[in-house]
Length: 450
Image (cartoon, rainbow, N blue to C red):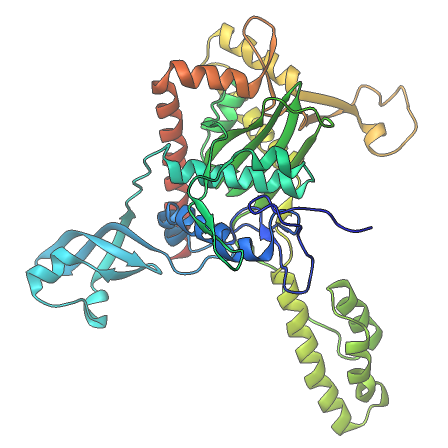
């Protein structure tokens, strides 16, 4: 069957040739892993879409530069506080930092009348990054909206619904059919804020890992995407308030940080094992079999050649392991947060009011599903074990609905939207807290690395 996916920017049919690599749903420069060929054509992907990503990625330069542990990240410049060691002590400056090294310091250069050389750099110490996030701004909103639209397109949402959110006033097409200009989106973008005691405990706790989360869901006539970047920047995007398609509830969660891995070490005298291992890690068996002949025959020269060949296979397998998808189950992630919240809840029982504890328990009961252990293990029902349960957080409800103090259940995005409209102070306080948690986490990672 012919593929009829159309580009959300130029409306041309997307041709799936060898040159069409697909658009990254979350920008590659932010550590985003997934990509899709259903979003835009090759020309728009290489042109107007890429230029929009570049502007958006610059916002996160302090995070990318300071962490040094985010996937797919190249060099990023950012400004920060530094100390310069002298015979009399330390001098403090603002400097430009790149790859965790001092790139330039105008104030220092004026004082000492020279540019920073390699020997000078040894006397500098990076103290902190300048996180000058002024949000919301158009670049940030456009970048988040683009991610939401990309994710919806990758899941097959009608491109006409999505393309209505793109403002085309500043976009023009040249004689070769290539689009130029700046992408702008009219879709509403507003921050997530926790509205119940359970979410307050989870979100207000310190950052323990960096993840990107995408959740696409519908409710009545609303089609909404929740976007979370670096476990910190949390936004709702209203893609449509007139949605009439099939009800949808999809999610994606990925680790952002580079993970350590256990290197693969082959058994050089077990050719079948090596072939099996190679196939498991995406290497064709035909690429392996011929090179293992010398090991099987046992002749010295051929054994040596075969071992060299196996070293190459070993490197290829290890490279594939390093590049393995970093996607994780959203349910696993939120349940880790729930376990953490349970510990905090136990501590806070003696520190909170009975009213707040009651609201917390009510929220937990709303979110948690109790599944009998025998059902989880695929066993037949047994009355003796029926009262033993696994408690799992319902991903279908997570950040889609929230219980209220009155005992009602409301649609989370609309409740947050009303709150954001009426109370800027709450929004500012919460976003500042999340950013402080992120900065603290990055500083700890940096200290552990040194």
